[in-house]
Length: 224
Image (spheres, rainbow, N blue to C red):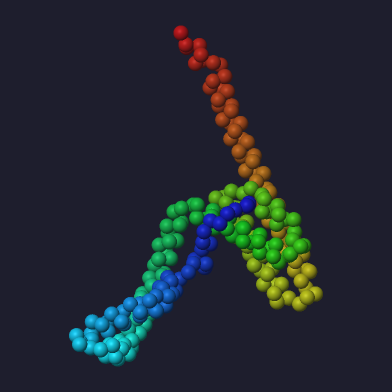
């Protein structure tokens, strides 16, 4: 079940568009001010204006710049927030048509759950985590996706329980979680065994077909 880093886990981990827009406005506020206000002062100043005259224009132009920039940032951020539900729905429809997305998320979910499980247990991490990390599993199989989801839920709830439990209950909580991990490991092993039987059956079927079709050398007898 080893996996790489397939990408975002889902909507719950996605950065909201309005935050991206607001962050961009904040990031470019100073460069925009440095470029806009001096140029506006130079264009608005009279032809014979002194440096002091140009600098006096900077204060009112700064006020206008800050007001317009803040209004623009707020407007665009609100627009992005209003578009966010539609963009998420479109993304979910697009991902629903691509079975690779669910498989990628399952693999990533599994990898994070194993890492978090090892962190929770430390040196006493159950051997089931090592077996789950190394076990082959077809993440395109919905059953494997369900198992990775259950594993992530076990680790999540165990972490929450350990965070709030008194010291004398921690050992029992870890033991309960370890038993659940063993069940997940057994289920994964059963899936792998079933997959192996099916693959072997397919190989035997093809071999028998080839033997029945070409074993008599009928094609060789047709040669001159």
